[in-house]
Amino acid sequence: MSELLYRRVLLKLSGEALMGEEDYGIDPKVLTRIAREVMEAHDAGAEVALVIGGGNIFRGAGLAAGGMDRVTGDHMGMLATVINALAMQDALEKLGGKCRVMSAIKINDVCEDYIRRRAVRHLEKGRITIFAAGTGNPFFTTDSGAALRAIEINADLLLKATKVDGVYDKDPKQHPDAVKLDELTYEEVIARNLQVMDTAAFALCRDARLPLRVFDMAQPGALLRILHGEKIGTLVR
Ligand code: UDP
Image 1 (tube, rainbow, N blue to C red):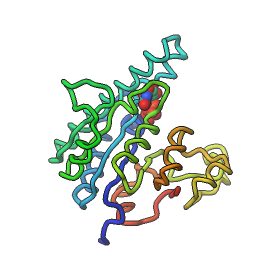
Image 2: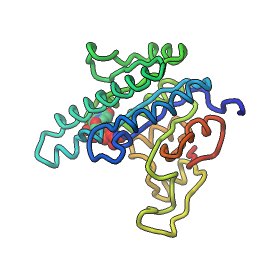
Image 3: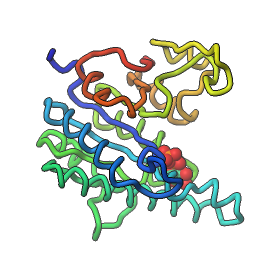
């Protein structure tokens, strides 16, 4: 295979990506499949950082809609991302990977605190590094956490794994004639009002000119092929 086009990448997975066919929690088979793909990327020589959402367990906005204080709900959502990160750490270690979980909120007994220089060192040493607890602040999302950490660690590419195979000109679930867009600038995404990430996350990527590729992780081998330069999904830059 060709040389890697991207050396250091951050992969953002939604919590729902871990659910598989279930409607809550983590499906161990799905977790292992994703971990295997991450290991493939690592074994090919990439430095891989991960951010995993928490939507398969709790989302602050959903809890607030049920009457809970929003900040408390967001704290629960952030803790949900830590649970997912620990599960992924376990799956990666079972496959022989070296892994560290770093949390934006301090829970030293279960994982490390996020310290940027230490995170970069982990990556340089070939440790798959999972950034948990998003940005550490309520009212944000893990998309924002992923954008922030990708910029902080100087990632070459932010990869956003979704259930659709890229960005479309309109919602492909509602419009059968929706057209997939292979490449976009940040300005085009704004001008055409396309949904790629939430506004805060998108603004971070745009201001840092961080390239972002949106793709479907359910396609086997997609992650590694992207790292080798294959144009899978949609590139925004
Ligand atoms: N969250 C937060 N601050 C952050 C990141 C996440 O408060 O910086 C909370 C928020 O409640 C969110 C939940 O954690 O709903 C889970 O994250 P997210 O919804 O982004 O997960 P995903 O949709 O990717 O599974």
